[in-house]
Length: 54
Image 1 (cartoon, rainbow, N blue to C red):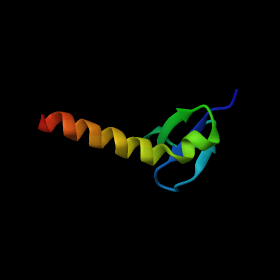
Image 2: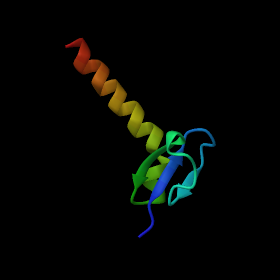
Image 3: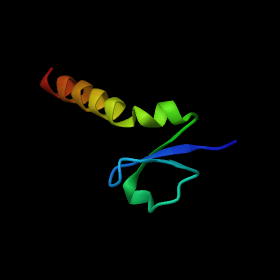
């Protein structure tokens, strides 16, 4: 089964991690999940920031 990765430098989706690990977010089960990787990262960061404020 293929895994999908979001490349933070090229902003492209990669199947089966073709780039250096330092450039990738993932793995994700579907291409669509990988396409929304930055949204997920932003939401997690905002939640962590909120927790630190509390």
